[in-house]
Length: 127
Image (cartoon, rainbow, N blue to C red; front, side, top):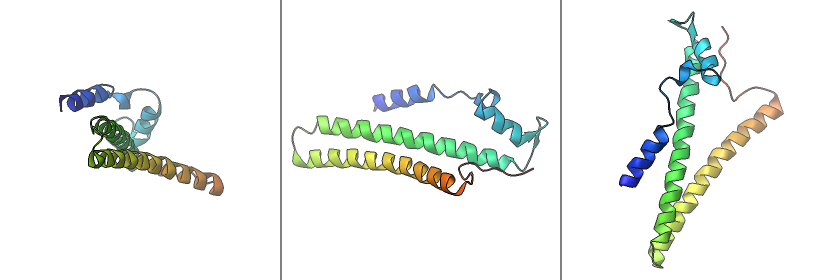
């Protein structure tokens, strides 16, 4: 259990609480969300969707990594027991299926974007 806590702390040590104030994609969304630096605008919905999707994708990656490592440890410590090997194999299979699902959903959205010419991977509210 300590390993999981230390691993989570290691992963979250890369997250800075002031990333929205730096340059790059965070800053461009920040400028569209707040007019003149202090007034919220309707474009705030864009920012909300952007940040929620960032969190969801990050959590999906962390869950995949946790499941993959957990399945690997289960497989290593199964000692040849058929039930333990089956449980470990199931965990690894579900982790890979989840990762493939995430990648496939992005590829499908990219294909639709290429095929139709519409930019459906970004929410842009005119204003």
